[in-house]
Image 1 (tube, rainbow, N blue to C red):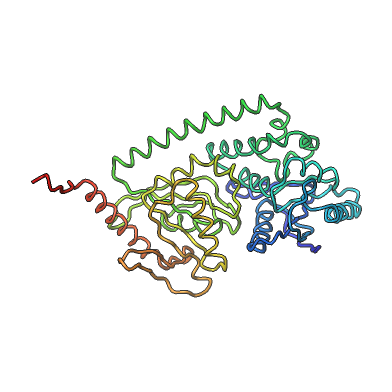
Image 2 (cartoon, rainbow, N blue to C red):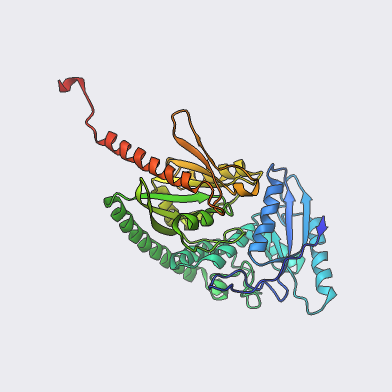
Length: 406
């Protein structure tokens, strides 16, 4: 399959200081490559690749698909498919001698050897899905901690790919997959790179200590902590803004916000509540990112309640719920009580409402963060959660009866 799909070029920064993409090349062009190995979520993974590329500021000029039973050990896609990609690159460059070779983005993880072989065979720069996601994270990170975590993840990932990757980085300094550490980091030898990783780990350790101090202060003040989690682009930041009257950056794209933002809000019946907006999750979220962001994600694991935001308009919502729960388990947050928040009901004219289990506990709320429908029900659910938390604390402190006590 060979298809052209143009996307508008983006500048390097939007008004207000939030970047929306930087130039990949003179025309920001890329070829997307996706192979079907029989996975049931192939179509959804491909659509996410399109959205990821768009979020990185890429103008997709072609989509190359194929079917295989297993990856080729040397080229991943097989010789014939790689020749097809190389022909598209040659044709694109041949149209105008001024055209730079487009980037080739694989919707899969590539080994260092495969990446080198593909780059040599196609005569264009090749990156994989993990590099693309890392690049978007580097683009979105605003806080010092976020930037440190992204750089750490990139350096760990690139440490096995230094050989053969820095030959064209001088021309591609601002390219997709090359943000963050940049050219100078790739030129460091492994010893210096390891030293940099150790330095970043030490910075994260100190930041984690500071966050633990803040958490202990909240616990002493008996302030309930609520974290908003969910699949990327489910509307978490919109809900956060609605609940806190904040202005966190919101956009209809993957990973529009990266840094965790916390605000203290007053909820009638619950008192002061600390509400935190966290990074969104996605299928096949690189393990290196989960590891690098563990200190930030631990804020989720320490919460009293999780608001699990779901795009009610998505046909894949239940698969997305499962993907989020998988990451929550990985960071040790599977035991935290959670309420499913079905967002974007306004897109299907669905009514706002509350669903309870057989014990009368709220398990799901349908609302629209955009219009505000159902927000009152969500606030009431926080008050109920606060009451349940207080009752659990009292039960834990109550003396246990023992027959020998008499």
